[in-house]
Image (cartoon, rainbow, N blue to C red):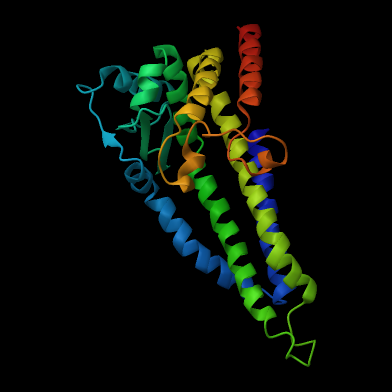
Length: 287
């Protein structure tokens, strides 16, 4: 269901781009220009995403000799999931958090902070690492890159529309000027809608990774317990880093409720725990 929802949201985002281009310019030229401008930056970021994110948090590669417990968990879960062993990194931070990055399973990395290693039990840490491996299995980095590319194209078109609107007053031939409705949608509505869709995709992928982790470890409650601890810790000791990489982290530094939740990169911890406990019941019945 979450996979279908993600595809539907990506289709909606793409449809928004196509419709916006036609409203502003009246043809495919604007779509191609905006898409090309956004694709160069976003796709290159996706290709080098592993190194960019790891450097942003000063993550250091670790071997089995340096951290045998962490290394063994990643190796065992990777074998169970039948994916290549990702790189294992340790972030020198007391904050409790983790993330996965990389453009595909063959070029992936899992990073955990020093704080999360000391805070969680081995079973809870296994649940967190399984969550990050699920992101790798589901190729969520690629999904987010596509969403960011299309969203960037929409923002580029909005920027172009804003500049073109300056000349509308001096344009005597209304048929030659941009569509006023298209300009309104481009400048105000479309970028906001694109952001909301991107955040919804991000939250959907988090639910999917939680479910994947529960099925991989067969212990959804362990991840649920970990999420509860991590949210409380993130409020007291948020991880220091570029806010642009917040969607990668397993928990947000601050939860958002009400309308603000629409712009959150992650679902509420309560909703995630509720789904994990429901998965636990389903697995118990199936066994």
